[in-house]
Image (cartoon, rainbow, N blue to C red; front, top):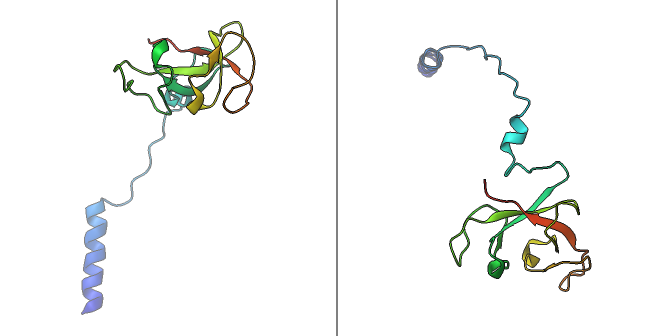
Length: 124
């Protein structure tokens, strides 16, 4: 009796699933990986480090994810390491030291890392 119930259950399961379906071929999207990146950087030589408030007085606000400034509500913008010809400032690449910014190369006063040429990605 137990085997009959199990057999009926298996048959019902297979009928309910609709049998075996063939997978349809997926279209290849060569830009799929780039579309998933956040945000898409302007140049290939740039690297997203963290998100920060675009207001100079709130440069201490930082996040690993996009969001809003906890002090003014503005949308956080990506801070990216870039080339010297595109930079706005030299900054520490550590998220927690987003407030360390200066006009000349040097070392971070808090961790000793080399400051990198950086810029804030403008909102689209």
